[in-house]
Image (cartoon, rainbow, N blue to C red):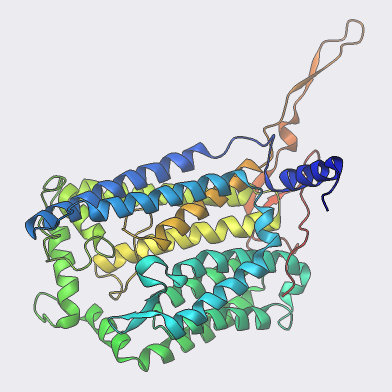
Length: 442
C-alpha cells in the first residue's frame, strides 16, 4: 500500500529540511584551503615515495600505491562534501547507534581480524581499520553525551564515573589489539573534551592522575611498549638496536635535507632506509626533500588548521557544536604533532599516520569526514549583523542602529562558574541559541 502523494511529499520535505541545511552562511573557506594544501602535499609525497622504489624493484604497476591513494582520497572528498552539507545535529541523533556499531567492529576485529607484526588492526583485509573509525565516532558520541548532561556533569556519579567507564571500554578494546598509541590518543582527546565541556577542574586533575597511572601500568606490562620507550633515552647513532634503528633512519633522512632540501622525488630515504616511508615516516621524507623550509611550512599549516578549528568551536551556536569542533580539532592536531614528534625523537616511536599526508584508507577518509563536520558547524554560525537605518522624524538627524553590539563575543572560560562549556560564547541581546535536542543519555 502506497502513501498518498501529499503524505509522501510532506515526509520527504521533513527529512530533507532536517538533514540538508539550506540558507546557512558560507562554510569556512580558509579551513578548506588549508586542508586542500595538505592533501596536495600528501599526494605529491605518495608519488615521491612509491613510484621510484617500485620502478627500481620492477613492479608491474609502479603507480599502484598512488592509484589506491587517489581512490581513497576521492571517497574521502565525497564524505567531506556530504558532511559539510548535512546538519551536524544529525550526528547527535545517531551518536548511540554509531557507537554501538563501532564497538561491534572492535570486537569483530579481535575475533576475526588479520594479524600483522603481532597486532590486529585490519578487518576485511587491509581495507578497514576500526581503530581509525573509533577516533571520530568516539568524539561524536562524547560530544553528544557531554552536551546532554548540563549541570549534572559536575556530579561525579552522573559525570566522571560513567564517562570514565565508557572511555575505558573503548580504550581497552583497542589496547587488546594491541594499539597503545591509538588508545592513548582517544583517551587524551576524550578527557580534553570532558574538561572543555565544563567539568570540574578537580575531577579533571584527579582523573588525569588515575589515567596516567593506568597507562603506566599497561606500558610496564608490555615488552614491546617498554622497548619503544627505551629508544627515547638512547642515542640511536651509537646504540643501533632493533628499536633505535627506525629512529636513526628517520633522523638521518630529516637532517640530510638541510635548509632547502634535495628536491621532490630526489630523496633516498624511501628506498628502504626509512621504515614505512609512505605512512608513519612520511614527514622524514618530506623534510629530506624540502628541507627546513618545507618542514616549517607543514607545521604552519597544522597550526593554521588548529586555529580555524578552535575559531569554529568558539563561535558554534550550541554546546554540542562547540565540544564536537574542539574535539575534532584537538584530535587532528595532536595526531599530527605526535607523528612529527616520533620522527624528531621527541616521543617514543609509535604508529600514527600524519593526517592528510600519509597513505591510508580509513585514516584519510575519517580525517576528511571530520573536516566536513567542521565545515558544517561553521555554516551554522550566526550570520554577520545587519546595520539598519532608523527613520528620521522632522529635522532630527538620521541615526543608525548598529547591531554589531549584539554579535557573539567568543571566549574561552576557564572558571566554569556559570556551567557553560569552557569553549563558549557570551550570549547578548539579539542572539539566538539552538537547543540541544535528542541527545543520547546513554
